[in-house]
Image (cartoon, rainbow, N blue to C red):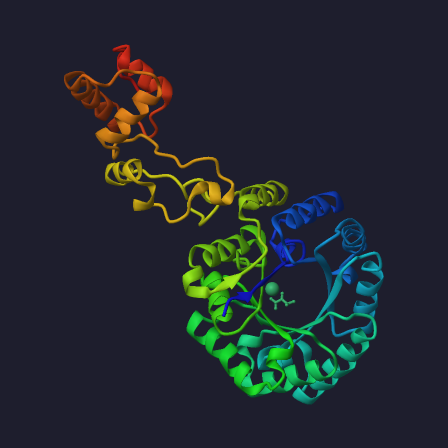
Length: 389
Ligand code: KIV
Ligand code: ZN
């Protein structure tokens, strides 16, 4: 059966926890509006109690976003919950996200709380939040390092007190796809109300597995995926939502999951977040990196010119990139060279001329990393080959 996956974006909250990233309210609103255009289901607009600026940004986003649900983060604290209530007053659709750490290391070293105290706090604060919100999300922080039986206990209390969404954070990016999938399977097996609420994945990328972990959770029953655009976030970042969205599309045979994301707005969304966060996108980044649709080797270029599907599983247009790229360099073959020269208007029908030109081109390519259009015109004009870089 095809399931519907909700996309929850936390670029403006967890994403802003990226060292060196600080969005002002205007920038946050700009990103929120673009996220809505991208088709996002939920925007976590911020952590209102954390600063006056964050409070105001959440308030402004709540007032401007029409279709997506707008959320705010709260610890298990009445003041935090009240701050989210206040900030989200104007929202058309709203949710609160309440969290408390549950793992032994967090219980003992950070919170100095016993298991019983954690359970009591969840009961008190989820019950309180439920008075004001229909949609209450609960997160047992550091869930993946929490004892599984205790996790079940905590989640059952949260559901009983009114939580409608249960998020399973891999707070420190510790888990792997097999384990994270198994955790969701265990929760499904051991929580009788599993199907009455939405289970959500929230992964960090410390071991480079955030996207794979999110997909493993979806395979095992998660109906919501949390992450950020370009994967920005604390330390190594969060699940990159654009990666999940495209993976679900390209491999729908494997995941059988639909969603509302408008993939052709992906590049615009990614570029905006990159620009406003000051976080450049690595060229080799999946989906949105400059090299993601570029083919360098002669064998690949020849294949792509004959049929792009030989080496492209994603068309650039799918994500809003205008075309693929066949950069000319020392690895390029004759096919790509001739194709480019023809596109520049040159007659390449004489095999002898092509042979000579291609030898010259290779000589130049051995000296220069990137061959420009000017270089190609110069080649034809018989100009001296010199490194113009
Ligand atoms: O990573 C995490 O545990 C979080 C929680 C606040 C959900 O971001
Ligand atoms: Zn997080």
